[in-house]
Each structure stands twice: as C-alpha cells, then as structure tokens.
Length: 421
Ligand SMILES: Cc1cc2nc3c(=O)[nH]c(=O)nc-3n(C[C@H](O)[C@H](O)[C@H](O)COP(=O)(O)OP(=O)(O)OC[C@H]3O[C@@H](n4cnc5c(N)ncnc54)[C@H](O)[C@@H]3O)c2cc1C
Image (tube, rainbow, N blue to C red; front, side):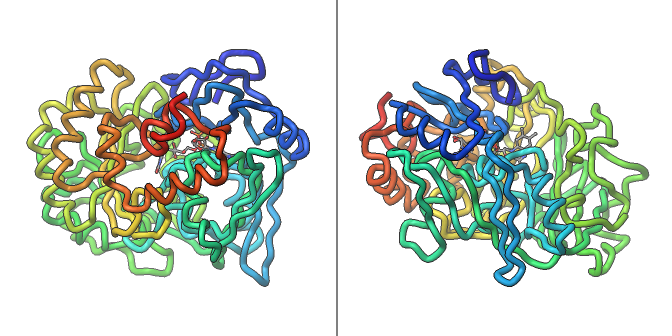
C-alpha cells in the first residue's frame, strides 16, 4: 500500500488505484466515529490484493495505526492480535512466547485481517487456509459499535473470510499450537504431472513451480517439520538444487527463506519470502484457482493444452494443496483442494485473455478463483461455485442493511441484489 490521507493510494502492485481518501485512525474510538459518520467505507489491509476487492465509493481506512496488540493467553492457547499486524510481526512474537500458527502464506508482509478476509493460504495437505486459525473476530459495525463473532456462533463461518463486507476488523483471536521448527529444501526437475498428488502429500508443505515450458516442474520447495525425516535422496527422481533458489529465476535468492535443510522457527521457513526483503517481483499480476484435490492431475493436463498461451505472459506458476474447511466464502470450502497459481507479467491487456483461457481450461473442475487476485470468471459462475454464498449474502444484508461496507466489486460477485454502487 502506498499513499497517505489525501494523496493517491494504490495497491502494492500498483495495478489498482483507490480514488477516495485513506484515513488512518489512531484509536478504536476514532475509527468508530469515522465509520458511524461515513456513507460508504471499506478497509485496506497491506494492499497485497491484485483485484479491486478493497475499493469503495466512499472512504478507505487502514487500521495499521491502531494501537498494536498481541495478547497471548497461554492457558487458552490463543492470541488476540490487532487486525493490521503483519504475519511477520505476529509470527516473531508468538515464537518468542513458545507458540506458533500452523501455516503462513508465501509472504509475511500481509496483514492478518486482509489475509483472512480473502481466504489466503499456504500449502500442505493437512493445512487449512490461514483463516481456519481464527476463533474470534472483533469489528466496528455499520452503526459504529464494536461487535464480535466467535467460534460456535451460527454466523461465525461467514464472518472470517468476509471480504471486508461486515465491518472494519480491529482484532482477531487466533488458535495457537506450541512452536516448532521447519527445514526447507529445493529440489529440481519433477518431470511428471502424475507424481503431483503424492509429491504434495510427501511433506508438511510442498510448492511446485513451473513456467509451462514442457511437462513438469523446474523447482519443488519442500518444507518439513524439523524432526521428520529428510526427503529421500531420490525424491520423485529430482535432484537437490546446487545452491539457494528464487522461484523467479531473475530475482535474488537472498530474498527467500533459508533452504538446504537449515532448521529454523516456523515463521522463518513456512513463508517463501523473508520479512525484511521485497517479496516476489513487484511489477506483476497474480491469478489463482482452487480445484478439488482429486482433479489436480487432470487440471494440470488441461492447462498444459493451453501452455503455449500461458508461457509468454507468465513469470512462474505454483501448485499447492489446502485442507477443506467450513468457512462459507473460503475457496477451500467443503473440499480438500489443490491451488493453481500464476504470477504474470504486469500487462493487463496481454494477460486478461490468457486468464480467460486458463479459466476455460479449468471450468470442468469447478475452479474457484482467489478473491484477492485477477480473474474474469463470470459472476453467475462465481456464485454457483460456493455452496454457502447465499448464506454469506444474507448475513451481509442483515449486518449491513444499508450497504455501508458494500462496493461495485462485492455487488458483482456476492451481493448482486443489494450493492449495485
Ligand atoms: C507477492 C504476493 C504473494 C502472495 N502470496 C499469497 C499466498 O501465498 N497465498 C495466498 O492465498 N495469497 C497470496 N497473495 C495474495 C494476498 O495474500 C491476499 O491478497 C491478501 O488479501 C492480502 O492481504 P492484505 O492485508 O494486503 O489485504 P488487502 O489486499 O489490503 O485487502 C484484502 C481484503 O481484505 C479486507 N480487509 C483488509 N483489512 C481489513 C480490516 N481491518 N477489516 C475488514 N476488512 C479488511 C479489504 O477490505 C479487502 O476486501 C499474495 C500477494 C502478493 C502480492
């Protein structure tokens, strides 16, 4: 995110501009009064989404300047963290206190509220989206009052991955586990799509990278619990990377988390990128689709059929796995999933038709787009892909009847009857 109150604001990648002012309240009371007085308002997290998901016809607000909170309840094994905290900051504090989260996304730079709002995920057959660690959400509602949704409330599964539609989140309570160490290796040359399900299942978290220039994966990033066995030397007929790797071969591997099996705390190995450096490339676009995990080999072959369209505008693709959950708007809702990710060159005119070609290839698999990335899936198709989307729409209508947190984007995909702004 760039910009301050009164100056132009864009997302991290610079492909979405937010016309409205960006407010930076310094207390929850200030935020409450801002929300109560606003006609339309939405939150911007760290701005790492590529879709205009945070856009509003009214006021944009960041919670980054609210007082920082990381309140750990060791007995309950929970931590209540301020919504604008980054995973990097939260991870370091939790580890220091002997605790951990089960997983992270590829970068620690994103805010906890923004990541959870969009269903951001890492990898691992047994690891859910990051929002599955949330057990309570505190937010400022449309009337300016503070309210909470807690695990066990009937509306809770609609309130965590909520796309910013229920209010401005001020804090989230996260379930913790004891801290743990992870080792990461990079292997090269996984040739066959058929090996993908077994490869994804072979470690705590596995990411497979391809540039769609021939079947197979140039790099395989394996993140294993430190006390688990080292991957077999013959791991799927691959070879160990001879030195540190960046998945974007033009970028500096020093920006990536340590490899070669060097053990370290979970928050310094589960992300691909180090908190203190720029993640990925910057001048890029991203798209991602989640398909049922059992479809992954067929989905890869379907994409291979359009590889000659993909490769010229692609920087890299990544395949990951995610466990099913019950969160109404999570892309892994109700199904163990595999994620097919694309980092594109930053040329929306060249990329858009290829995104559409990818979506056509993945249509038979019920591919759900990542809410925070670029997609062209027809809104009616999007609405058919999430079985609890109508419940989410009902909840949004009940909690925010005047559409204060609504937007044209939300109206297109989630609340067509209400928010045609
Ligand atoms: C380099 C890079 C790598 C990425 N890697 C991954 C990855 O590994 N896995 C993955 O799934 N995604 C990944 N993403 C996508 C990213 O995780 C999501 O777009 C995520 O939402 C970004 O969080 P944010 O804080 O930047 O949210 P923003 O983009 O700022 O906002 C996203 C949504 O959250 C809402 N929101 C933010 N804060 C609040 C709040 N306080 N209250 C209410 N609503 C709020 C906004 O209104 C908006 O609707 C990546 C993105 C980049 C740029």
